[in-house]
Length: 180
Image 1 (cartoon, rainbow, N blue to C red):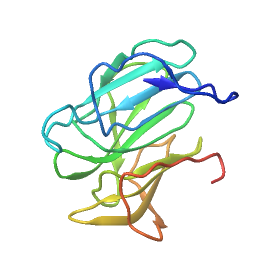
Image 2 (spheres, one colour):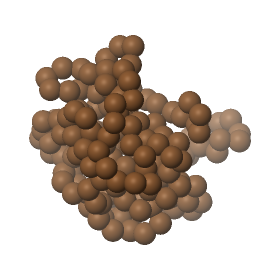
Image 3 (cartoon, rainbow, N blue to C red):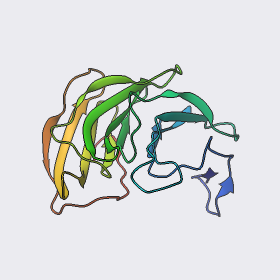
Image 4 (cartoon, rainbow, N blue to C red):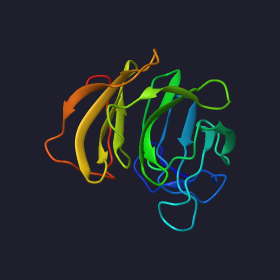
């Protein structure tokens, strides 16, 4: 795990280590905790999804700690979070899924079922405000998708169509603030 101090320029520094070498595991969290949900363990791509949830306390450098487990082993979900909840939306194991898991950030424990996306997809990206989380693009079945789904983070339930991206894509970075 590497970190930068946003208020100053410079190279990243070592924060600590994850529990295991894992890829395709997006992160999220709040002002206190950084959290990673699911991912892919080293091995044959697409066939070694994990159900691990791990976290760090952002103010204190150190190794990740076990938070709990997802409802199923998933790699490549889109994530979004408010100050209290984090969501993992979609993913694959090895086929794309529509499931949405959530955790309460302040308390460790296993994820719970939130609802489903409008369509199964993985390798998308997620953005969120304190109110909504949006799962954007990814790989549907069997091709790239431009579908965007949203949920209201405070209430569980299935996703609703948010609109479409201009172009279908996968494995992109994303960012948001409370407006865009």
